[in-house]
Length: 160
Ligand SMILES: C[S@@+](CC[C@H](N)C(=O)[O-])C[C@H]1O[C@@H](n2cnc3c(N)ncnc32)[C@H](O)[C@@H]1O
View 1 (cartoon, rainbow, N blue to C red):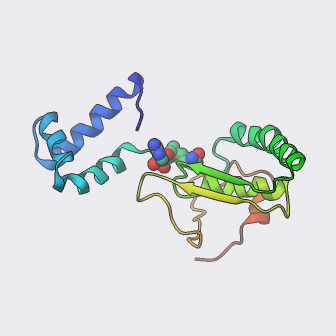
View 2: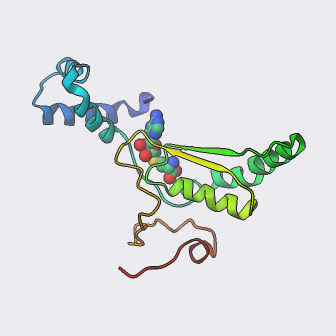
């Protein structure tokens, strides 16, 4: 994991919280715990504490617009020229899946019928939920960035 200087305070704060929970009073003791055989569970807990899982559909709109208008178009043209039909995308740091779903919606819109593979991963074990998990429209802003008509086109409403 990478943290630049500006996030040093965040890192220190999260580490201190874990130290307290583990009943330790110094960073070296915590380092010893993490690198020990029994430290595996604590390492997972630490990673969970250091990752920010904020996500929503089309969360980073400019990024997806760039992907749709520049990268995807160019990629398809180059693939066509080479008669290479393999397409594979990777959503690295996918959180609970809203980003790969957004990519899939863009692909459906820009290249209907074209086959592609979409891989999604996240280092936080609590993040990725199976495709079948319903998305809650609970006012958490998950849908605010969806392009017009996206909600009805790509989602089916279900009563609780
Ligand atoms: C702020 S969220 C963004 C989620 C999603 N990409 C989006 O835009 O909606 C960042 C995610 O990246 C994951 N993450 C952070 N560092 C990572 C790494 N080195 N490898 C894989 N996932 C990582 C975190 O667990 C978290 O779920």
